[in-house]
Length: 531
Image (tube, rainbow, N blue to C red; front, side, top):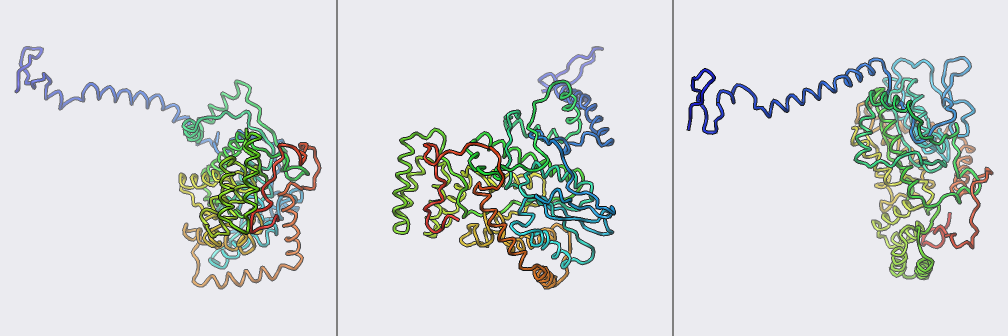
């Protein structure tokens, strides 16, 4: 029903039964809507100075967020990886870096049309236990030249022995000056090698940490952080030397590794921070990146096992009794051995050696999926993690998904080509290093990924030319090269067992008869000897 409401001059205005004028409803926004609009405008006006400041900082190229220092660690000195040679025509790795890097060089003035790829990582990228000549970086360059000879390709090996993400981030910062066209990032196995603490780092909850990470991409955030930091004393972070000081380089280094869940969590967080930092660094410079989820050997005994913290003496005795019972059935009745091993795991599921023993039993029975899961449990509980941990692999996959950056999952690539889908000696020569054939497989997968992303356009029948170049490269290597590789492989195994040849007082080893001394589980699992 329509009624008449009086106007100020006395004339009636039609209105609805609820007293609201249709003319007012049609001509003006409701009062509540005006309030929301006013508040939104107020917020935009308040944010305008920050937007202007962000634009100004970007125009002046100040406070680049990806180049902020690592908050976890610092370095006493950072020596450049590449220096100009005597006649200033090439950049090369100087002899001072020979202990960690292979000889490498490239033109100081980039040739016209050259596509320059820098490969960052550890000793796997370097080609250990051999050298750069049989690394996937060499096979990749040969394949690229065969597949697309229309312009020159240059693949530069920046694999540093024992180099972790926090050192590789500094290398990447330097490489930005050398006109890169693509970065390949293949890292993670070396994160636990150097001794460092994270006591100055606050354990920020994930729901707060992620918004902070997003905000840290703003330059205004960096300016505010710098200003706040200048007003007060900042927590002191550990300062590392210019070169790696791996604990396993020293005699007795393995004895310094013990269960420390807090340290493990912080190391994983540090790795993810630098992974994201390196990706942002490349994105800011508009240089494409391909990430690699590194491969590892599942069928490798854990390097060190310990009982879970708080295990009582009575529980330890029952654990050993169950394991001894299982050993009695090795080679005789594997299902019975599995039963006893599972009872031991029910007492202590943190002992890496017991998971490895169970995996070997499953493997002998061709129960491959159960074997794979137990091998992973052994890897994840290794007190001395020399193989990438699952949360780190997940971080690589997550960063690729979130940023749209291609990720080559080498775990999947090698697993599908391994017996029973279990990463083992089919393609790897030790716990993480692929064989020469494995490096060639990585190069092949990289070529496919680069072609999918439009970096090259392979010519028909290029594979035959690639094979010819591979054969020429192999023929150019003398017998001494392969003998040196075998020798290096032996040294790597000794190193991984904590038998490095350097001397430094690290920690007093526990005697074998100490109640805290725990065997590492290498003895006894069926189907494999100690080394």
